[in-house]
Length: 215
Image 1 (cartoon, rainbow, N blue to C red):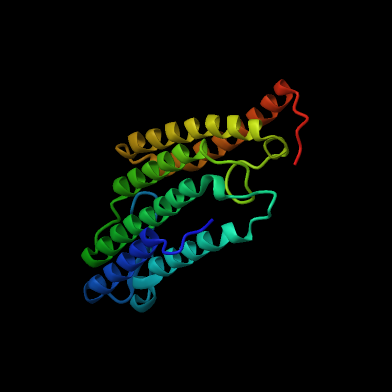
Image 2 (spheres, helix red, strand yellow):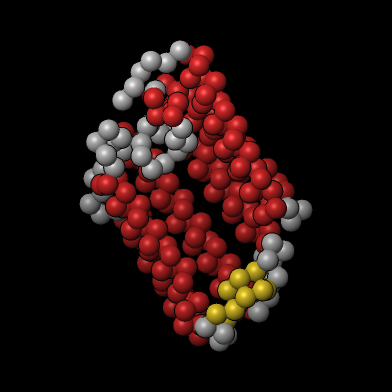
């Protein structure tokens, strides 16, 4: 997977560090760094660490996503969905930047984290990831890797198209639930349910197709 410049990722990382540098003088020391599901503060950290923690995490995620395709075994090439992998990278980094802005704003204003906006961001991220799911091919790092999806490209594609629709629907449900401050409570059980249903679906499709293909 050849990405010589990877400009979108570089720009998002640069904006993340610039945002922290710009907000730094306005941040208290120690600064708020952790909030409960309702947006109430329940943890603080030294400003020098807290201001640049999310940008550092984003940079680490960016580097990981840059390296993983190069580590993929030949049996699981990622080039066929290189465009979707870049979109996945942008979605993750974009969400981290959005979360960082919410956290820095809450810390600078010494107000609760705007939990509804955070939940909306989670829902949008899920919808974006779900949209990418059905466009992936068999690979070593991303997707629903069961014995049955690995055994057949057709089972992989059908399972991920099915799971993708479920994840998009879950994202929309989280966005809707955010208006009732329920998005953060809903997301974990919803994602677990999607995964379990998708695993069962992959087995059912495998048996229905009578798959003999292996890699």
